[in-house]
Length: 379
Image (tube, rainbow, N blue to C red; front, side, top):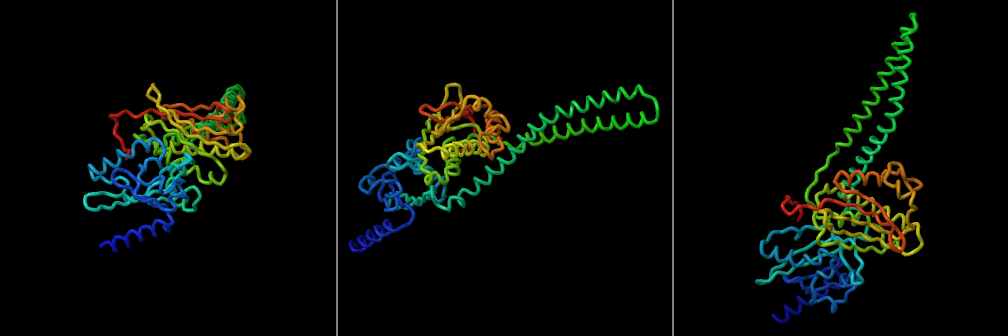
């Protein structure tokens, strides 16, 4: 029996030293039992530093404070919400930096005790990121194109309808003048001018109908977990940040937990703001710091912020930044931030930009906090 136990321990030790993904075993209290060599390299903790400690210290806020409750809920209800199902989450290293990772959890029962094994793969610099995030990326891309089309139709309708109205008025004026002229040619000319005026009106109606059709785009607002929205959007937007030396930090208010939102649309806003911040910092040679934060407000709103340490914005640029076709990029169309404004305002919030203390820019937008009694789809 003793020999068999020693063999099993030696086998487990060999697995922990060689398994390519980070492997962590915890008990039902959340305390770390085993910590693989890959996990040591990934999180920056040695086995001696982490074994016996609570697994929550490998998580950012608010998951850190909530994790013990997740375990207790499972042990009380046996309701599986993540066990056996891989998902993208955010991990936190010993130095406080965070990174997107793919987590799969398995369960083991020995006697009357539960053990949970987590297999973790760093998504920061792996080619498999594209595959694992393909579905999310497809949804966000589809919504982005659809919203951009709606934004362009709305803007074009406003801009084109003005000259079309002027054309129609001029033609009607010409028609009235021609009514004073006698002769067969004048009759033909009046008829042609009248038809031209009718077609100008018809063109305006077509553009208005197109705008109305696109502005009705699908939108399903439900109670969503704001930290989960940020996790998914960050995992997609932060691809390649490690290679570019960008230091990413998350400051999530535990009170700012649930919002009433269309998941894909808000992820689109977040991806757009995060990628914009990254692009701005890539043009700078200084320290590259990206911050993502949330805060609960007393007026029943939740505020989300995305900050960068780039060169900042001139006041005259910031004043018109959310207008369609206004851009600071050489190859940009100037619709990204306009789309963000449209989405946020449709959710009953607002979006704005301000300078970051110490240099850089902070984009902020607000969403309505979900009421406790509202039905939730949050896991």
